[in-house]
Image 1 (tube, rainbow, N blue to C red):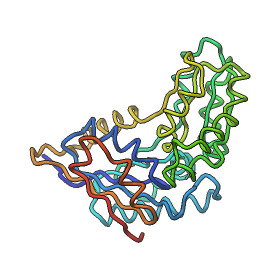
Image 2: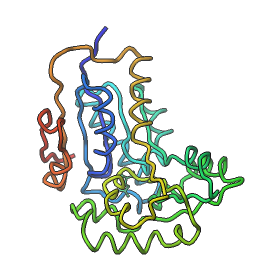
Image 3: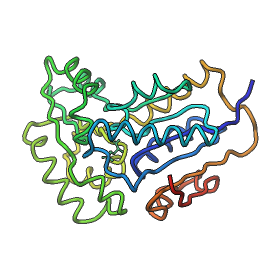
Image 4: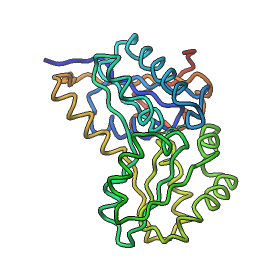
Amino acid sequence: MSNSNPIGFFDSGVGGTSIWKEVIQLLPNENSIYLSDSINAPYGEKTVQEIIALSKKNTEKLIAMGCKIIVVACNTATTNAIQILRTTYSLPIIGIEPAIKPAALKSQTKSIGILATKGTLSSKLFSKTSELYSKNINIIEVVGNGLVSLIEQGKQDSAETKELLSKLLKPMLIAKVDYLVLGCSHYPYLLPALKEILPAEVSIIDSGEAVARQTKKVLLENDLMNNSIDKPKHLLFSNANPKVLAKLVNGEAAELSEVSYLEF
Ligand code: DGL
């Protein structure tokens, strides 16, 4: 059986496209719909109840648009709402969490840094995972205050962003981390700035590839893969800043994508 219904993605804004890119690269036959809820960004400053309500709103919109599976392309929404989403809706739901495990297992200095939102770092799900790996490891958690808003304005390479990042990363440099975990789907867009600031021996990891592999696995297990040879179509919607969103959709995917404004 082949299922051509789209894979649905949502994030508090444009950042989840870093995950979307990994997924559509690994699954080149799949159609997709991406919801950028930029009008409500950042989620990381909201209460758990607010994050749950927004996650439900986005999931319901994607279900109404015919999606066969949901990828929550947001660490903050995943760590605060995924259990409720999974018990409320019957379709498969994939989430994204900071990649603490590989960083903790590979670290030589036994010191790793996690850059994420307040909402992610204060969630129960994150604390549980972090406890599992913190036995012999010094985990330096830093809230990336202000970073999501700068990326939402398309300012990821600005002097303002570099200055803020340098300040935020200081405690990690002092603690001699050799791994930096990007715990927010917006942050892969900071890679050029991060590489300028961090010493070359610090490895930077995110969870995009792991999410793509998990999405493929779940589609296969549920017999939901699209085996059609037609060119796929990717529809991306922003309820605030479609121009910033469109700028991030580049490379081969751009030809197959349509970015527009939508109220949701
Ligand atoms: N991309 C979201 C994440 O992965 C950003 C959260 C926010 O809007 O604060 O956590």
